[in-house]
Each structure stands twice: as C-alpha cells, then as structure tokens.
Image (tube, rainbow, N blue to C red; front, side, top):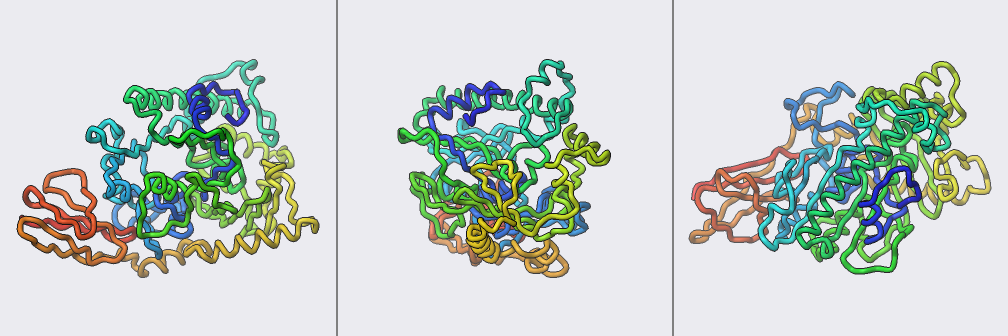
Length: 489
C-alpha cells in the first residue's frame, strides 16, 4: 500500500482498498512500551513519565533495582489526571478485549479490560454487545529476525530491495528478506481476524485500525527519532463510505484514544493531549521524544510539519548510536559494528557512529525521507528553523517530565525512598439492599465485583449497585498503590 511489493500482503492490501491509507501517522516514541502508553492514555510519554524504556516491570519485587540504570523499577505517577481510555468504553457498555500484550511501561489499570489474555476475543462478549478489541502480532518483532536460521540463496539475496543508506552486505540483505517474509506471515494472521469478522457478519459495521507500534525493526529505525523510527504504516477502515483512499493528514498516537471515543460518541471528564481525527483534520505538528533505551540515554526531541522536521539534541558529545545489547543479536547490527571497527563505514553510518552531533538538525522530510541532508547551517532555512524551534520548546515546556533526567523525574514523583503513595479508603453508603460507593480520591477510577468473580465492573458515579453477596471494591490511580477492600452485604 506504500509502493513496495517485496512482500505479498493480500489481506492488508484489501483492508487498504476498503479504508484510508495514512501517509503520515507517527508514534511519539520510537520504541514499543512508551508508545503504547500514549495509545492507551491519549497523552505524551514525556507528560505522564513513561518515556524511559523498561522502567516498569510487573514481576519484580518492590523497590527492585533496574540493572540498566541502577534506579528502582517504577510505575510513573503523572501530575495530570489520566485514565486508560478503554475504561470509558466499558462504562458505556462496550466489551473490551486485549489479545494479549499490554506492556505500557506502567501498571495496567485493572479496569481497562473485560479480558486481557491470549484467548481474549470479541466473541466472548454478550450477544449483540458493542465491542472494542485489540490484537497484537509479534511475528514482525525485531527478535524474529535474528531467530531465523534459514539460509537464503545468492539469487534471493540479489533481489532484495535495500534502503540506500545501508552498506551492500549479504548479512543485512538476509535480515531484510527475513523481515519481508515475516510481514507475509503477519498478513496471514491479520487475514484470520478479518475472516472472523466477516463470518460473524461484523466486517461492514466495524471500524478497523491497522498500524505498528513504532518504525521498522532495524538499526536506525527502531529507537531512532528519525522518520524511519517514528513514522508507522496505518490504515483505517471507517464505517461510512468515503472516496478518499490516501491522505497526508498528520496523525499521532496520542490521537487514537480521543478518536475512538469520538467515533463512539463518548464524552469524558479528563482532557487528552491528542485530538480526534474522526472526520476531522486538526493537527498542525507532530512531536516526539527519545530518552533511555536499556542502559543508555539520549535525550532528543523533534517536531515536524509543513514538510520540515527539526530535531533538538540535548546531548551533543556522544554518538547517536547507542550500544543496545538486545539489538546486537541482529546480523545487521553486527555488520555495522564490524565496519565501524575496521573504518569501512559509508558516510551515512559514519555520522551515526560519530562521537559528536549538532545541537539541532533540520530536514526537508517531504524530499529527504531518510534525513541525510542537514539544513541547519543553511541561512535560507532560518525562518523555518525559528518557527519550529519556538513550537518545539513550547511543547517541551508543557510536558511535565520532558526536560529532566530520569532520577530528577523520580524525585519529583516520589519521596527519596521511592515510597508509593496510598489512596484513601472508599466509603460505602447503604440504601436498602443497594449500595453507593464514594471514591474519596481525586482523579481515581473505581470498580466493584462480587466476591470470587474475576472481572471488575466499572463503577459509575452515584450508581446504585446490588451485589449478590459479599463484594470487593477497587480504587485505582496511576502511580498509586492499588486499593482493594472487601465489604459484607
């Protein structure tokens, strides 16, 4: 759908024919967990404190130390009120299922999903119930490139299309070919979901989004603030027919939550940082950030719009390249490292490995997609630079945690002992055989369930509930200890 026929993708192609192909959809972070936090909240990672990769780990003990940065693991405590947007859908009667990856770089709201598992599916809902279902496909993950042990013939490698900036090397070609083959596997998996929708008579009346959670899986793609790391493939099949099949409209991941609620005609009390793109075009600029990836931090910020992109480098004395041990399992990275050591790199990757970088980088991305020609020192573009710089720094200032180190951010979120704040106990008001729940907490979500049930019901404010017997109440706010209380009927 973007002009490369190296992988045969009939299902994605058909979805593109039935919907709109977005040419300019972006993640605010070029790595999975921070980008997912923006999808589920409609907020920028630098605003809610989820921008540092692998900051949160569900399975570790309290105050366990992260080997990547010698800081404790943590679930961010945002300053602004936030809520997982699926709570709003569930409040309004939608069945919400997630199959099955969460990985939001923060504790998942216990109220976010009716079901979040490898068997989660819209087919598990009540008959006729509206639904919102997420399906995650891992087959194109970077790890599935280096896991491939199948050798390719010389002829197969010769036919691989190479991005112009990669060195001509069979190891890199092998990785690219594996990625194309993985995309074909992905297409078959997507086809199964689309076939299920059609079998259930739901395809025509269902809005469908297809996208990836960051740019491509290669070095200088994933974890990179360049277009290759931020711009993602995206198709939206809307219910209403439209003559538009491709659009240059700017879309950010922070826009998905408000768009879905807008399409469902749902209002909510907390504001999003994103804006709906449902029958609207309201975005002028795209903002993005990189911070810590595993053990290395490179604070970079970017803004794009009107064909140009500006990058701000907070650190100018270390390379753009960062040694990520996980990524070094890929042949492509091993080849680049070897060429660098032997001083045989091409100009493009010489700059990537260079020990210093400009404070600012300016690119005309409409003509220079791979961002090879830095225009920052050309006086002809000075006005464009000043305009983008003004808006970029305004965005950085507005983000609560976008201009501080990770340790300073933790000091501002928690006490020096990383003490996780507690929530107030809710109050239960008895009204004959019914109950009212008073949260007693600002910006908190409240749920309840009969004792021994697994799924939490969303509690609507001032709602009278009638539990079968003893029941549990949960109060949740990101960054606080989850509070669960049992009440006798």
